[in-house]
Image (cartoon, rainbow, N blue to C red; front, side):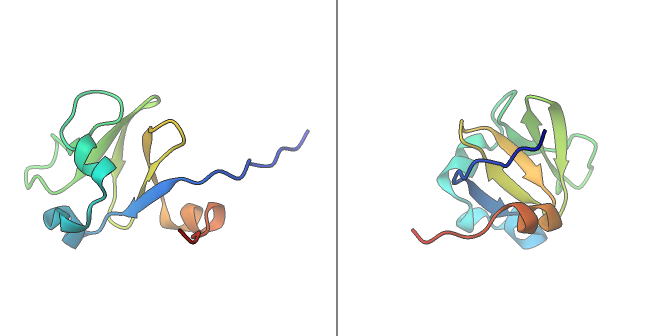
Length: 96
């Protein structure tokens, strides 16, 4: 059987080195996730001595955010990282 993804609107934010250190462009939902605990958290990678790298706690476990990855807030508020090429294939920008 084949399935098509339902058209849903999600929010996303592309994380870059500059945006890691200057969080003035971060959306409210990403600020809320910053350094929370457990699923839906956005925190500093404890294995990074420079404290630059980030990770996200998801239902499937902990995922590292690489530079250029999009951080997506799903339909139930969950967060997950998405590689730029997959993001471009899966999502398109919508007018607000």
